Amino acid sequence: DVKVTQSSRYLVKRTGEKVFLECVQDMDHENMFWYRQDPGLGLRLIYFSYDVKMKEKGDIPEGYSVSREKKERFSLILESASTNQTSMYLCASSSTGQGGYEQYFGPGTRLTVT
Amino acid sequence: GEDVEQSLFLSVREGDSSVINCTYTDSSSTYLYWYKQEPGAGLQLLTYIFSNMDMKQDQRLTVLLNKKDKHLSLRIADTQTGDSAIYFCAETYNQGGKLIFGQGTELSVKP
Image (cartoon, rainbow over all chains, first blue to last red; front, side, top):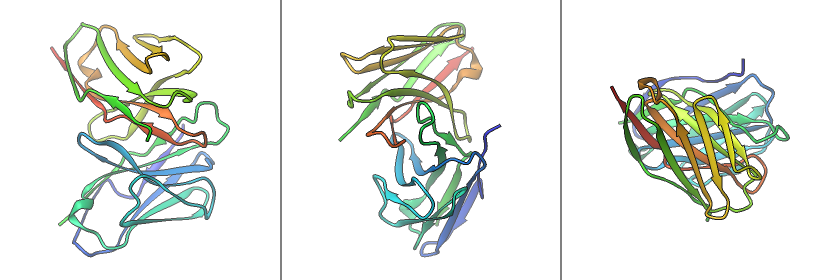
């Protein structure tokens, strides 16, 4: 059974803190993605990666960075958390060449910045 | 830029059919998807349709694709309370595995 796991389901951080969100997939997928989900806005792509040590900006990369040192792990970093980064964060993975580019999602991390 | 639009809410009675609609802009999309998100969970793929198809049926789910109008719909027959969730449509974008998601339609099923 395919699996994408995220390090925390709920996280509360203070403004200005550095925050790490971890995502691990066990499907040997090349592609990994970080989204944030806000009511009425759907999913917005923050960053994605097609391979180890590679990263591409998505639609809303400001205030975020990522790290992909190993194929199975993709980390999202909030350099200095702000209240407008309070959101649900979803990680996904997919395989290049797999028919349909289907993305598999983790359960999400609900981050609150106070 | 590329865009996917959905209405935000739909309410139906248990046993009725639900139809969730979606419009997209990228005519080169090769696949279109429907995902389901239950409360507090991630997204789960429900079904997908290849762009050269008009219709796909999978048990209670029917997907209709009108490429001329760039319109995608998901019909759920005999809707149950367990179908209450947010439904997202998504299109492939520019190859390479990126998907563009709609805002999500919250389906509420009343007994």
